[in-house]
Length: 120
Length: 120
Image 1 (cartoon, chains in turn red, orange):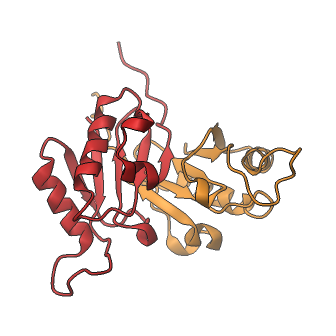
Image 2 (image 1 turned 45 degrees about the vertical axis):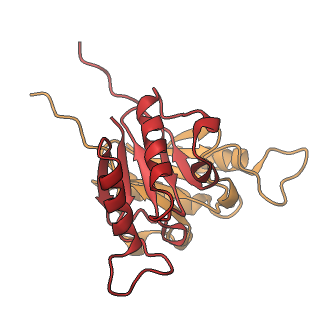
């Protein structure tokens, strides 16, 4: 199982002053449209200048951080990428299979930590 | 123990055509000046537009990705931040204690994965 971390603090130009900020809208849209994913809201992924932001992680897999996510346009792309990550052995998904927005807005990736020894 | 991942693929303006690229120089300088740290070279942290790049990770701690590292100027700052991370319980180090370059060039951070149950 991969975890999809969503920054709920991100704002975007055009956020309604009285409405929920973009990060909250992104999390809500993902929860609505991708209920099969494990979605965790985070107060700041420190990618503030390139938001909205989300990251996909799993034990033993590479972590990917994605930026410039528009909650009105990129929910399906982000969900598709999280599912690719979930289905991969090491988090290194096939480049061509990743949605274009994901390919063009990958902010960083980090290797997995060494897996701890299995107990026999 | 925290792991300091260093992108060895990053180039920077001014790299000598015949010399090692900036990422390799950054790793070499860190290994020379911070032998107490666990340093792991990585072929691409996907932060190419904002290199040189490094990330600090540890099981159960937040991961931080740092960018715009100059191997001639920021080795001490990066090593200091990795040591702060190593000494912290959760990877969330005190803002004021972080070197200025680290504060201003944090590219992203990602929460730890849930720690697996301890076996009793």
